Image (tube, rainbow, N blue to C red; front, side, top):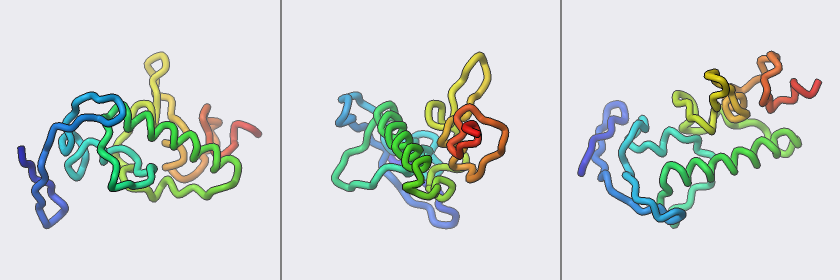
Length: 137
């Protein structure tokens, strides 16, 4: 199946294909979904190291890998080992992903560290998952 991606002025054709996740062996569609540029995976933060030798992961496995990498990133940020470049990462701005940016507790959204980091500053509202250390004061 072929779809069209609109990159502003230039339109590019991509192949939408069925893939097998190398991690869980689950079948999934690649090149389809809500991603702004044609693939659902583009909604996720670009925090993993790109590797052209690796095959695409299904949504669940990609999410799990990204959650692990975000946990490492938050730890390194809090320890002062890295600066926060989350606001600059591609795939970050418009989409909220449950389990990455927030979770739902008693019908309410609770923002996680990644959402707060990609916002780029501490709001000083004592957010439960504040990565800037405001809750520690």
